Image (cartoon, rainbow, N blue to C red; front, top):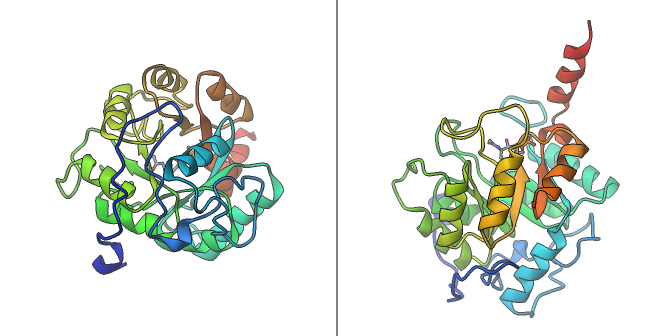
Length: 285
Ligand SMILES: CC(=O)N[C@H](C=O)[C@@H](O)[C@H](O)[C@H](O)COP(=O)(O)O
């Protein structure tokens, strides 16, 4: 990924950043041609992406259609940790295609520009994209440059770290929000506390996710999902709130929806065979 590939550009749609219960007004006709998956085509599980069935509709309508397709439903995160033999774009594309073909999932969450491109080739579902750069501090899509690369690789929704921790380039989160919107994508703010969620929503984030609860030293620590945070956020911000992180069972996913989540994102419990096998092995005498 070069700076030229990742850097600015794109037509700013010039939309406002007013948040509404139904989401964003920023979903422009993207400069990223690969990222124009038909957001209304939730039933379209596999096949060539980018059919852009909603192309030509207003940005706001496209954003609302995308968010509606995710409401009350499951997004599967297809990510492999560094060093895992599955950490390969072709493997993640096969994983995502398998899940999409065999289960009524609403979307996928995919890490890294190469994986996003590979998954985009074979899965037509809405995609939350991110770019993990590093492993300490702010590493989930840490700068506007990373965010633009993710949008241009084909993700309709760009997930970024929206915690209060210092960002590696020292730039404000607001710049990333503006860059993502200029690229015609929506921004998902990965947060660890309710205050961070409220701040992100005020900055124009289109969706909030509880992804980082338990991953900042000042947030709730625990083995399971932070449903309390889901409920608090759902009651105070006017954008969709996603439950994500440590959802291990279908019952927890349902409880998250009951707590007010717009949708749920599940990763390791579905797409991390080593972690799943370890739990089984640990239960044996
Ligand atoms: C903290 C962090 O880096 N979370 C990452 C965000 O994309 C992923 O490693 C998680 O797998 C994802 O959030 C889904 O969570 P879980 O795998 O617990 O269902």
